[in-house]
Image (cartoon, rainbow, N blue to C red):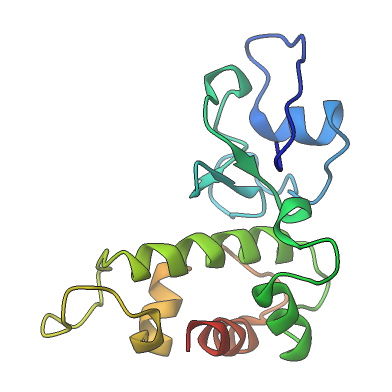
Amino acid sequence: MNGNTHELRLDNRTTLLDTLREHLDLTGAKKGCDHGQCGACTVLVGGRRMNSCLMLAVTCDEPVTTIEGLAHPDRLHPLQEAFVSHDALQCGYCTPGQICSAVAMLDEAAAGHPSHVTPPDRPVGGDPGLLTPEEIRERMSGNLCRCGAYANIVDAIQEVAS
């Protein structure tokens, strides 16, 4: 968990989200819908974005990174900085999930994984700097923001992508 190992005794039905929040005091991932539909609980598992409310903690056998583990000791992660500078948050409830999702999404794009709206003539190889606002919106569609900060979220992601 965020570079540390934890040994926990849990009920085998405990979700990763509940483990993070209730057993490890990592409260960045939020419980929104508890059905995997809002993205507020998004964390990185093995570098891939996951809805932690849908994942059982006992099935997690890869490193987990939460919003608390993204920053370096002396500075924020570039996406965290961009969210602040672009005012890409209002209430902040969805922000940790948005940022974790954006980190993985940029990695997916860099690895050359296409999305539904990736132009068919885009060269394979993955340059996240080529992501259009439409493509960022589509790739981030699993993360909802009730405050409607989407335009600023897209701007923040585009800044880091380029």
